[in-house]
Length: 554
Image (tube, rainbow, N blue to C red):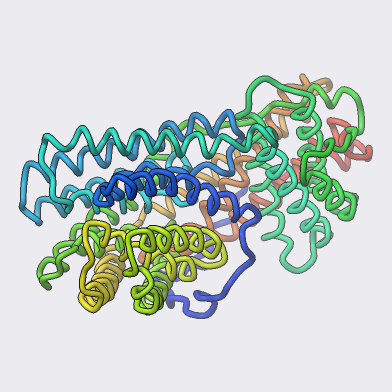
């Protein structure tokens, strides 16, 4: 185990970033999938209600339709299960909100219920890694339902409508499986190959190599999770697994990897063509496929306690502040606060800036389109569809850009029950956005996450244990292949978790200094052990046994 002493390299507090917060990035590779899916999920129910003259029910229909935004990165077998849970979670949140709205007219009580729901939705979505869009859409739907006029007799009908549109959204999201049944796994494998190629191009020592290596291992872990969440092994899946092993080999020995070949393999995974046969260095390596390390759900709940507290407190205070200002829709402030909370204070600050900028610009867009939306009910529905599509097209480039479309869509949804004065809507939206962002961020600062440093120490210990276990197997004259492969995957997962934990802790305020040197040393020794393990498995060219033993040593 590393004996390097902790180095106080992290100050108790740091300046909040401004540079780059609004910078546009590359669009998501699958931006068109959620964009088209949400339109296909919303349009039929909305136009059906339009024909029936019941646009006042569109809000409940959209509750189920918006589930079509989820799980587009999951293989179809896993997607089917995840979407069922998303729809059930949406129905649970809406059900609680509608019952609360029918039992009490106290805005304070309703805001409190909304804040508790938002905290629960945040924790469950983060723990199960459901996203994007994570908890924000669920919180938006349940919070809006809290302030819709309601009676107990109406609740079953409204829930039935949400359930029906949720089932339709499930069908929309599963439909592409008929055309490209292995599409998500192919994309995840391609991402792992490209990330490995990026690290290979640094030679393992060039500029940005540590970040490229961390991104590579994270992509490989995601690819394994994708492949191993599918149904029974198939020829396609086995071929994809061999490619992921090739990516792992490139990460273990970047100087011996061919970045061009890795990128060529990644490119060949587009479409529905045959998966390239990337033979492994020796036939026995095929026995190593399908081995992965998994973390139980409960182990991911503990670290989310500060986020839950921040969400509950921030959403409640934002809603109360909105009520104190006399705003008629405190759920806008509540949802704004709920949308802020990220892995640490630095990221939460960035999201607050993006939310305010996007909403203010979005209000101006609403002012420009409201004359068109007021031409008639059909025009109103079409405008909502256009903005729902635009939001998914733009949001992967930067959150504020997507908010430019989300804001006018949210404003237009309020008009399904009847046209409202545009100036009042715009003023209330801007005030609620500023109040929600300000109060929500103050709550995030107030609820400190002093355990972030403790989690880094625990992640360090886990990485050291995984490295020592792997080194012991390497020292055996004839280790069992599956045990060695399981140890290698476990070590890779521990190192990936260590880097993610250290990055998250680095953006927190008011905590003890982080042991950055120990983290770096643990990563270096762990990756040397990974390289030695891959060589022992025959996945890399042989080297002198003495050198191999040295590689495995910290």
